[in-house]
Length: 355
Image: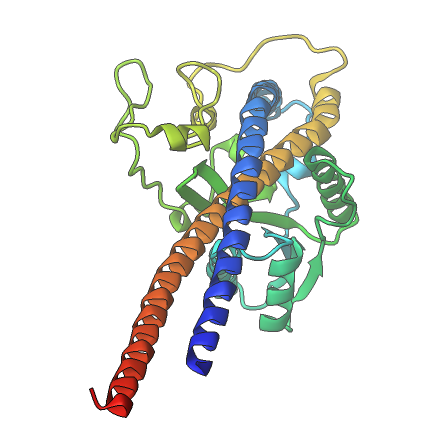
């Protein structure tokens, strides 16, 4: 009977595990829906500040080419002799999210390998936004200066306030001369079942000059959508599932009708704007730059949060399935063991009575 008691105990343990993983899955689904809604609502502001910023950069760049006394901010043009490269890794503070942190850290290793191959003497510092990834990097790379900025520093802060804190911290470090180039590594949310790890240079802001030297590390595979149609819109290959639609199953679009966010990065063919700005364009650019960085980091944090919840949802679903399979196997083993014991007792009773 000790074998039956042990099997019963294991079955109860598996049942408890299934309850926990199922509950965590439902919590992740709820969080994913909320974060997905926030991410979609953040796009209009991000798109419009992108447009405003691009106009100003185009205008000031044309003045600079015309030999007028215009000097773009350091955050845009960078320092002439960069010596310190800062890598910003956005990971999670909590566990049980599958391979979420591992995918970001794997891309970090790729970026670090490229930097060391280009210049073995270049100094590399790391700012990890998220406790889990920071602890892994400290153990794996003791030679690097790894600073952890935990997202649970103040649980009352919203993600936008966290983005403000991060952008202000980076601007202070840059103008204090603590780094010359900054590159962000984070997980971009595409759908509930598809995420992509991105590498983007933040300082200098190369995206406004239509360049990203890390594109070769993030190939643009598009397995869900076909090419754009005549209207410039994307069509879904596979039929949309209702459950994925509820969880953010469709790829995120910028709410600019026929133009999505990627289109904003394409080189413009029209001439620069000929507006007269008051105050002058350079002062406007300096004033808008902090707001742009805040919105940019806010989008990164929202995409990271959505990706983390999607990873956790799928991880908990897989754990629940494994627990269910384990419980079925234990139940079969329990019933087989019980049947063997009953049969054995019947045989012994029959032999004792001489029937």
